Each structure stands twice: as structure tokens, then as C-alpha cells.
Image (cartoon, rainbow, N blue to C red; front, side, top):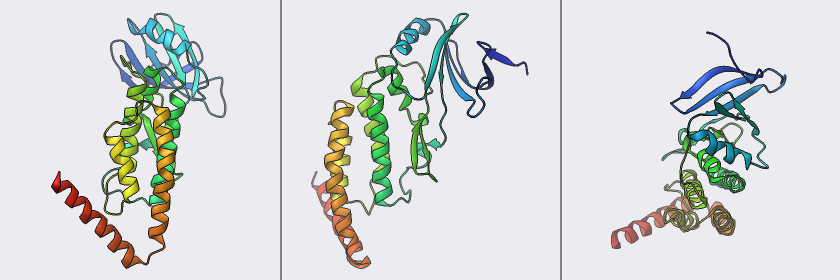
Length: 242
């Protein structure tokens, strides 16, 4: 296969997506020795002037390297991240301790809070499910900046995407405390209009959530199991009444 070079610096090694006016590729920065892999978002046609303006507004994004014009295309270059999509790690029945779930939720919402400083078209795209990456071994969440073209994104959409991923992490399950369940209900109802109140609401809720689980951990195994059984019975009654 013929080697494709962009700007005489980025050697394309794999094209991950290619459409009429957008492409996403993995490249190697031949000027970088230690961490040469880069992700290139390439825009053409009507998207070019739109994303040229959008990327000119990016500040304080460690993953962003540069954006430049190359012939009739705009290329936006980002550093990659490891991990697998969140949907392959957090699903109904996944086995994670409550402490791990709270730690992952904190990471996810903090990442979303940082995205609030970016243009919504970038922040919302970075929060799509295939871009929210989880390294289960390292217990770390990172974002991949595959910035597909998205129209009419705003702070509300960013909060809804973050809420959806937080609900995946704090998924309904037999051993779920009432405080955590209550916070998930708020996420489900879409109560938070932007990331800042969402993150603030999480920090208020997590204190009560942690206190409830720590109190349950003080019980012996049978009493703890019975406490969760009773919680689930009451939840079932409430659902039936509704």
C-alpha cells in the first residue's frame, strides 16, 4: 500500500472511517520518538469552514495537538488513549464493587466537566459511547477524540450524554443502595441542565451513597443480604403502585 503522508509529518497507518466529507485515521508522527501515534480527524466540503472555526476555539485540551489546512482538507490532530468502549465493561450483570463503581463515576463526570470548556461539537462527540474508553485493569476512564460531525450540540446535550454513561456505571442491580438508586433516578429524569450542576449534584449525593454502603458493610453477610432483599421488595411494591 502506498504510504500517505499528511503535511510531511503524519504517516497514515490505518483509516478507521471514511465518508464523503469526513475521515478518521490513525497516524504516526515521524517527528516524535516516544509517543508517535496520533489520531487525525479530516474534514472537507461544508464541514471544513465549520470545524476550522470550532478547532480555533479549543483551549486547555491536553489531547489536542493542532489543526491545519492540507490542500482542500482540514486536519485536527489528537493524542490517542487506551481502553475499550464503556459498553463492553459496564453492562447489566457486570461484577464491580460499589467502591469501584463510585470511583469510575467520579472519573467519568470529571472528564465530562473538563469537556464543558470545549466547543459543544467537540465535547459531545468525545462523549459518544465508542469514545468513552475504560481500562479495566488500571481502573481508568479516558476519552478518544474521534470528532464526527455533529450539528446543534449544546451544554444540555453534553449533560445528557454524561448522565447516560453515569447510569451505565451505576446500573440497577440487586446490591444497589437507596441513595445511589435515587441519584440514578435524577439522571434518568434529566434533571441536570448542564455539566456543572450535574457534577455538583453528584458530589452532594456521593457522600450519602458512600455512608449508606459503609454502614451496610458493617453488617454480617446474612444481614447485609437481607437488607438488600428488603430494599428490593420495597422497590417492587413502589413500582407496582405506580
